[in-house]
Amino acid sequence: MDLTDDHVEHVRADASMVHSAAALTRVSMKDKRFFARCIFHENKDFEMLLDVRGKRYRCETCGAEGDLFDLVMAAKNCDFAAAVDWVEERTRHLTR
Image 1 (cartoon, rainbow, N blue to C red):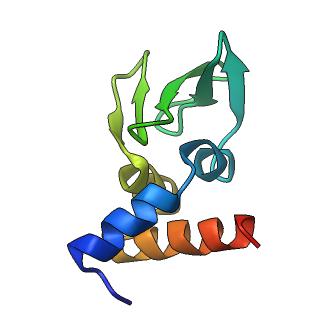
Image 2: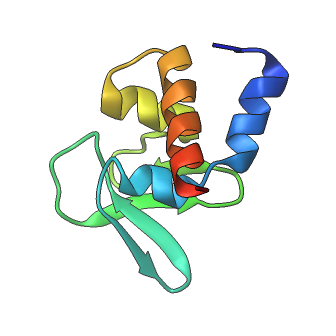
């Protein structure tokens, strides 16, 4: 796998934060913003704000935050290379 900065940024640029998060947890849209159920604590509310442009997340309850790859690493319990690979594969699947 190619993990150069250029490759990682290309994967990040092509990826959809909403589609990636939706593959990991439930996502909902409210007032033109996307929220997800936080993967870091047990709660059924949609408290994790998804920043579509910045490809970041932040839970309003527990304060967990990070980027797209951080979310994948936490949800999948994997390392950075595996997270990049998962996002790339998911993005490739969506664009077919």
